[in-house]
Image (cartoon, rainbow, N blue to C red; front, side, top):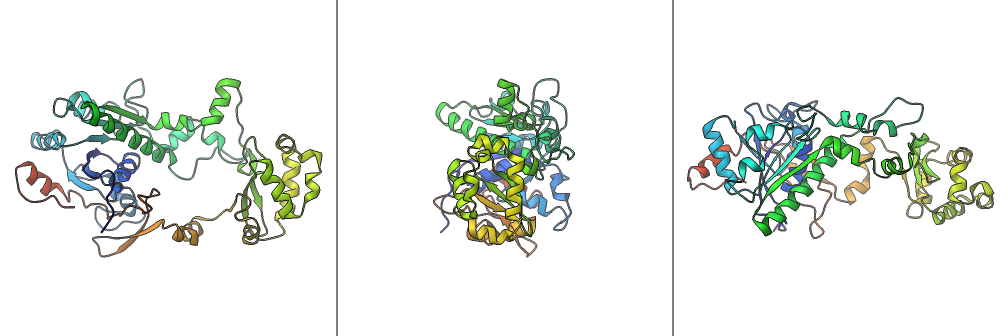
Length: 389
């Protein structure tokens, strides 16, 4: 018997495409919420996003963001579809979207429009720049936020061109912020009977990720530069080092790790070198220390160094994507799950990174376009058929 999930009994309707909102609602679906994905007749653009498609109206890109959900095609400008949507809202906990800022109000899917139908409804909104202000109707994507919010200026080597993070992390972080906000609001509505609007924007999220570097600038005017070897701006040695056959990342974030590293390397002489005595000294002589450690680490392979350092010094090899996914520890952690697909294939996906009582939540394939539309319409019309799972 599968373990119960903490969000069982919640119903969430989502007008979503591509990554940010689908990522948020997939976590809610993984944790047991009934997530009804509303699509146009053409479907989420992600269904056609290559390079790997799974037949008409499906792709691996779409599958990876939409596990455990249901799909219904609705056109809110059609009176019948609008009536079905409002019927669903009556017995719904949240309505989510990732539309341009002004569209939720125009489509009547914000709290002012829906509170008469369900006073406890929570309306979650992801937009590029927010639902108010001069950019409310601007389109926007993850990479644009990385550019304007300063993330690209902090990424890569000093002499390289501005560099984006290789993944759409702003999308995913915004999705998780919305999921947190929506669940917090549902908790409040459960106590008070009053719902609300919850907003997350890609730009706000990207800016917030500047964290301590941004705080240094706000208070001291410090502009953190791009650091060579992906180094930490104020701790040393915390950076990439070249080995005989690749790279490892070393994190000596405190004095104890530094002293243990020297012991493991057989370089106690460096402990007596005043240039490297403290973190501040090592920071002031980063380039000199880097040259010494490069020469040391070049003597062995990454695997050999990890055998020496593992579990003692925080360190990790730099792996290409294929080796990263095929890493035996990924299997040990249970982070890959097999999911049956309607095509007859068994697909592999990343498991949810959270555990419920020590187990990762079960997953099922993303829905076909309008797969659950007939059962939802039948239920709304007073039919007796059960909604398909």
